Length: 154
Image (cartoon, helix red, strand yellow):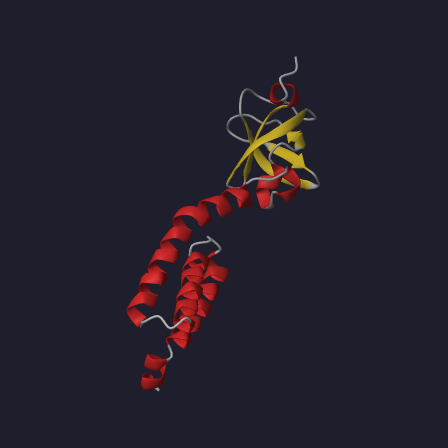
């Protein structure tokens, strides 16, 4: 079997690509998929008749180029976008909330959408019933500020 693999490097490159694809699905950081691109380039080099040492060089060069040039662009495209595309707690930033219990820098409760969150004030004490805006999420605590402060109104 090892003789067959030594003569058919394309099978090794295909196996490496599949392994990198599975690891990428687990990590989701766009690193291993760049290595997978290098393995596909090396497999093409094998089909073109390149020696194994040249296939390894192709794998290294293509992988490094993809990590250096393609990955940063892909990451920037993934991270930008309208608020409708934000997920999880990032989606709450900028949302309006209502103070349920007075909120100070030490704590309090706010209602965001239909959920009650522990909260703390970015500045001052916010009385119950006041409308506020979520400025940040710190763990399981919403950092809020008065709605007029958040939008620069008086």
